[in-house]
Structures are given as structure tokens and as C-alpha cells.
Image 1 (cartoon, rainbow, N blue to C red):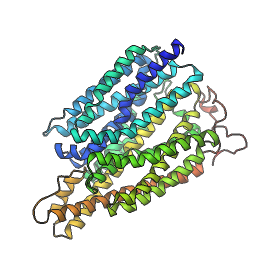
Image 2: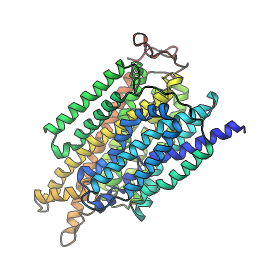
Image 3: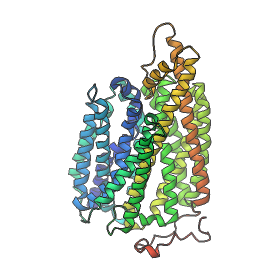
Image 4: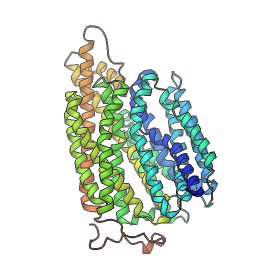
Length: 529
């Protein structure tokens, strides 16, 4: 093995440890939600903001993180991101019990997201620059395979760590960060800089647009869908995102080169990723709280419950990659989306039976459907970009995916809270409990908390009603997930192109807005409708 290969492998190992924390944190926190909610007494929406603050901060600042890496140095950004992420993790674990606890943990979850946004694009760029062109594909495949696998480890690790103390799910990042910093020192990667003007105006527009749109969607359960706060936040957020897009078209040094979306195939892949992510990441939150509250599973067993999903996901991902290589992304996306739609529908239908053995075939089916879609859609989108902009294309797909997850969690979280209040009023009303008390109990269990298990002569009956109501509410959310995947199926049939990318995309394809053609269709195929 050559010296350069050894050095490159050290860089790859360092970046895997650095970035691995960010992928684990997308799912590990979901398992601990009931324990955190019960310990800190977080509000209904506060418990969901704890998840969404991370996703939203990551998606809103990802592109800016890439630009800062080019200007200030990629190694510096990775190190800064690792330190920021680990420090914020430690502070999340040190959340004090009291009136300030909700604000504390939400703020430092957002700081974690910013730290992740600083290190992710820089880490990818360092891996690309460490390997020669003919080795980069294999290196990136290893990188994404490992980091993607860490997403599946999150719920399992979170389950066992929560059995010890929910704070441990944050503290586990500290030793990982130390290993990453040591490996970065050993690898000593080249830190070439390419200083460019930073589009701060664009950064403000996209951050404000994403934040306000998600704020309105997630707070609707408190404010009401028809309130001026909800409508105002969503409208202003949407207008800011439109203003960002227009600004990026006109500025000489855009934060995101949005002209790449003139390629209809690239745009179609990203719509698929947006919709898919609205289901993929939020399902960990909803299924883990359902498993612990309605099925009365421990945190560790809830992690194993989600492992059933990843069983189908892991196997189908391998087949999806082969289909992509042989036939292109469309067959895998079409097959996976309809499989996921049916799987989520059947999974939802079985939830109110409160029997895991009846659910697991449908959980595997849903996981397999997602596995067929995610890898091919993501890879095909990057293949549609010129080789020199792979990093930028990856940044766009990551931004789209995380924003989709934020929006999905906000909308379905609001629906879950609202529907659970309605279901609890109905189920508790049948045993003589009034609306006011039912709403109070709904507030206790909205985040999956088990504190509503009451003692005394009717306690068991009350808790059974809570289990049934929460199962019905989660069922509604999973029916929505099935509907979203059905939309992906129809959309992919119409817009995702047939065939695979046969040749590298021209380097200057998106430089001239008047000469930005759509992706050339593969030989023998017509352009998509």
C-alpha cells in the first residue's frame, strides 16, 4: 500500500468518526423521548422541537458551512464542527431540571445541528481531495455505507443507553469526538483553500425561510391552524424561500447554485428525497414513542422494535444499488415507493391491535420500500451534476433531505398532538372522564411520557384508554406516511427518467442560464414527461 493510500485511509477514518456522530444523533434521541419528557416535564411541542431543532439547524446552515470551509479551511471547519458538536452534546446531557430546561435543550440541540453543518461538507471535500479520481467512488461508497449504517445503530444504542440514563445518549458523543480529533491530527489532511465571497444575504434568507415555515407548521397545534401566528409564519417563511431562490439566480457568487435545478432529472430526484425524508426520519420519533407508550416496551426493546425496520431497509438497499447500476434509479424508486406505501398502510392498520407479532411483516415491508428508494435517488441526483460540483450537489441533497424531515416532523407532529387530544377525549369520556381532565392527560403523554399511568381504582382502565388513544393517533400519522409514499410512486412514474446516466455531465452545463438544457436522455429513451 502506497504512502498516499495510507494517508488517504487515515483521512477517511477520521472523517467517519467526525461525521458519524451527526448521523447517530438523527435517530438516537427518539428512543429517549419518553424518559426525557417525563424527567424534564417538557411541553407537547417542546419535545418535538428537541428533535426538529437539530434537523432544522443542520439543513438551514449546511450550504453556509460548505462555503466557510472553502474560505477558512476545511480542516479548520471539521475541527470546529467536532468541538462545537461535542460541547453542545455535553451541555444537552447537563440540561438542568427547572423552568429553563426546555429552552436549554432546544438551543443546544440547534447548536449541535450547526456544528454538524460545519463539518459535513468539509469532511466530504477532504475525502474527495485525499483520493485520486479512480479511487474516490469506492472511498465515498465506504463513507456513506458506514455513516448510513450508524443511523440504524442510533435507536439500538439509544435504547440501551437510556436504560442507564437518558443523558448518556448525549455524553457518548464526547469520546467519539476525541477519537476523531486524534485521527485528524494523525491523518494531517491537505487543507487547500479556495476563498470565495460568502453570500451572507442568501444565508439569512434561507435560514429565516426554513425556520419560519417549520415554526408555523409545528406550532399550529398550540396556535391553531387558522391563527395569524401560524398563517403569518408559514407565509413569511415561504416568501423568504422564494426570495432566496430569486436572489441565488441573480447573485454572482450564490450560496447554492440553484440553476442546477433546471436539470429536470436532478430536480425530480430531489423532490423524491424531500418527500421520502418527510417519512424516513420522523418515523423513528413516532414509532419509538408508540412502542414505549402503547406497546409498553422498554427503551431497549423499542430500539429492537425499530431494528425490524432496518432489517428490511438494509437488504433492500443492496438490491436498490444493483438496480441503479444496471437499469438506473427509476425502477428502484417506483418499486420501493409502492412497496413502502403498502407497508406503511398495513403497519398503520395493525397498530391498534397492540401486538408486535402482527406488525413485523409490514414493518419489514415498509423498511424495504424505503431502502429501495433512498440510495438510488440520492446517487442518481449526484450523478446528474458535473464531477467538479459533486460536493455542491451532495450539499443540496443533504439540505433537501433534512428540510424535508423537519417539515414532515412538524406537520405530522402537530397532527399527532391534535388527534391525540380528540382521541383521548373520546376514549376517556367513555369511562366518565371529562374533556378538561382528558386534555390535561393528553398534555402529559403527548411526547410519549408514561407519567399518565395513574394508580387507584380506575388507574388501569385510564391507562388502557391512553394506550388505545395514542395507538389511534399514531395510526393516523402512519396512514399519512403511506399517502406520502403513494405520492412518491405517482410522481416517480411521471417525472423520474428511465435509464441511467451513461456519460459525465458537461462541466459548464449550468454556467449560462440561457444554455442550461435538461439532462440528455439515455440512448433509446425519450425525455421524461
